[in-house]
Amino acid sequence: DGSLVPLRQHERATGRLLAQRMPRPEAAEKPQVNDAESPLSWLRTRKDRAGRPLISDAQYLAGERLRADFERSLLARRITANWDHAGGGKSTGNAEASMSDGTLSARQRHHAAMAAVGPELSSILLQVCCLSTGLEQAERLLELQQRSGKAVLGLALNALVRHYGLGAQRATTRTS
Image (tube, rainbow, N blue to C red; front, side, top):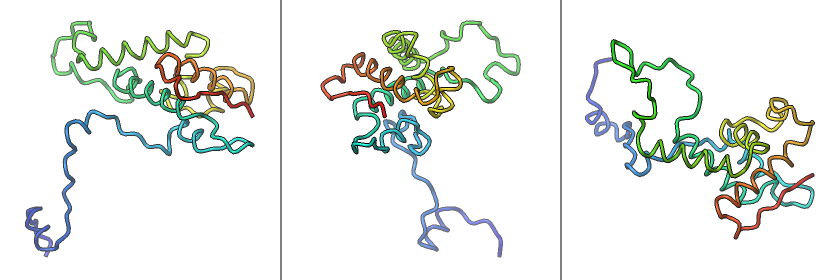
């Protein structure tokens, strides 16, 4: 008849659960990732001529750790307007003062990892791991030679593995 029925009453009457359960607090802290959109996941599932993954588990974990810190640090570009101080709110001009401790520590971890990798390799990590840019596009943006992105990314991920102390797991660069 088109009339509105309370959600719980509808669920009991039809036996279908429509409401989404709220995530547990610890699950809400983790950024949601679509593996299909991640260049690292793509590289991890592809094999070289010898049948080995293009990046190792340690390289993948290091790249994902960097991405998670990047996401938590709020360093990504905004794609919408910032309405935080709209409507007469005063801006102190000190954005870091209004950040949470978790955001600040993630930002520090991200900057430390990028510094440890060095300026020569950090740009490809930023493009591929943090901004989810594909390898071909990253090569164009960074003006790398065609088909060299995989090797450069492998070197950068190895440096990141060393920084995070994940070296117990073998991290080798695949160049095919």
